[in-house]
Length: 293
Image (cartoon, rainbow, N blue to C red; front, side, top):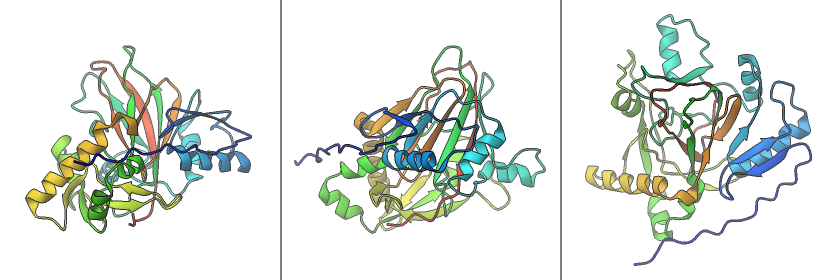
């Protein structure tokens, strides 16, 4: 039986002048130094941040002292802000909250933590967020609470050519109810949770690379296959994504860290290994476009 191809790691040719780029791995993730996100970002520095984001897809900014408005101002440099379905429902119910900020918190009373299943953010939307920025201000005294990331680009590249060809042209259904009801136990709003259809393999709009765009959190079926075929193929793809450590990086949180990830290229998993200690942060997401093959 032929083995999946070994994918060569290509050097990411960045020559920044105004930031420091320290890769977490050769495949995905980098820490960025020399930036104060509480201040206006000069044009050259923003261009270098964009280039690093396009190369590494997960950027970690340490020692940032940010207000909610600072957080949102930086995010708006990349597009219009997204409103999470939870926040939209709370706003409809008259909740007093900023709809553009999604609280990410867990303590001894939590039934679950946000992001505990491998996923890309809100792929049940017709136009999922292009990226998210999570700013953590409280970390568990015990340690822990890391976030793991997968390069879904590298996962696609590691599939055999025959499998890549088979997946071309297939589409998948992504349903909010799978995560929000099935995993979190939340009752659906009057109109139901979002649902969308996306290609199984998408193309990244900025670098043209192909991405394996199915995730355990939201993807429920491959539309062109029979039910049993769909379930078997999805489980294979989920395991392929999740079990290869060479596709992954791991972000260790410290207070006042902001991590910006590319929802079009990576999936993530929040590690809940710190119960009953507490962790708190705020997430801002940026609207994206409809994924295309």
